[in-house]
Amino acid sequence: MVCLSAGAIQAQTDIDAIMMSKRNFCTGIMYGNSSWTNYWEGTLKRDNENLGRVSTQSVSIMGNYGVNRRLNLLFGIPYIQTKASAGTLKGMRGIQDLSLWVKWMPIEKEWGKHTFSVYALGGASAPLTNYAADYLPISLGLRSKTLSLRGMVDYQYGSWFTTFSGTYVHRSNITIDRMAYYTTEMHYTNEVYMPDALQFNWRAGFRDKGWIVEAVADQWTTLGGFDITRNNMPFPSNRMNATRLGINLKYEDVFLDGLSLTGNAFTTVAGRNMGQANAFAAGVFYIIDFPAKKKKTKEVSTEKQ
Image (cartoon, rainbow, N blue to C red; front, side, top):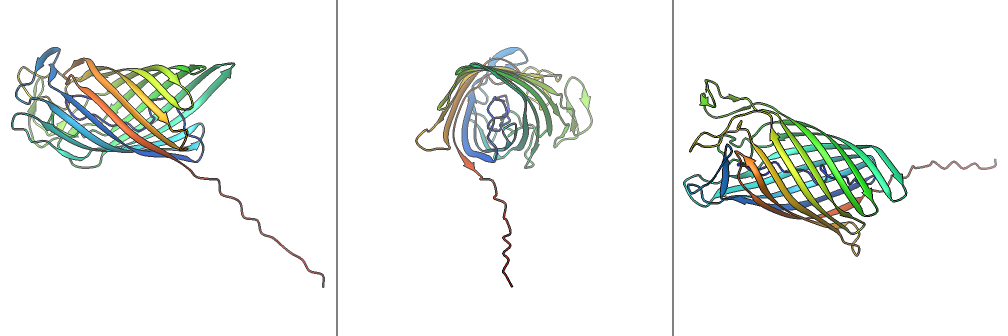
């Protein structure tokens, strides 16, 4: 999620219709870069001369383990660095949030060249460090613990496919380092109510043994919150909405079994209380196959007496 703050980093395959095989563990590292100079103050789009270009760089360790071909466990841990090219706000750096996902494929139907699959996912995230959330847009994140439920359907004909998913994200309240703040009214507390959110994702493209090439459209909608007031700083409980378009690539090296290279690029085409960010990422992953343990048999020999 690319917003006024550093966005949450998602695990490797929690948003696509690819499952890891039984006892296979895919792990790797991914670099990401996102930056913006314009943002939406509410629905008003404006430039940001006080901060210049706000940029976020991330290095993430990700993994996906196949319990079996229908059940996968995923994780992601990002290290993030933020900065602004102008103004007096000092950038931040550090580990952000741990994200965990369980991915289940209860339905897979094949007929001819057609394949239809249904997926159910559950996710959770929590901050790993005590970074400041009330420091937008330079903060590493929002420091809210989250629980997510996602439904996803995938249809493939030959090597062509389309995937659609919808996610409900519950976000816990957070605490900030001040005992009073103003939203649309005065609050004499350090606790901030965080509204929940919805995410919809659609992707379509080409998928075969060596390549995945897909166009992606993504919509994030906050279910509540308030707009940034005129010439004011953003706040963690703002209504942050964003529509992003992009492309995602994955190449599996047929000459080195288990190695894959990934890359993507996205741009924010519409938003509310968000930066109009352009982002790209690239990563390398490797699949480790853990063979099944062989059962030890006890040999019993008898001798004639």
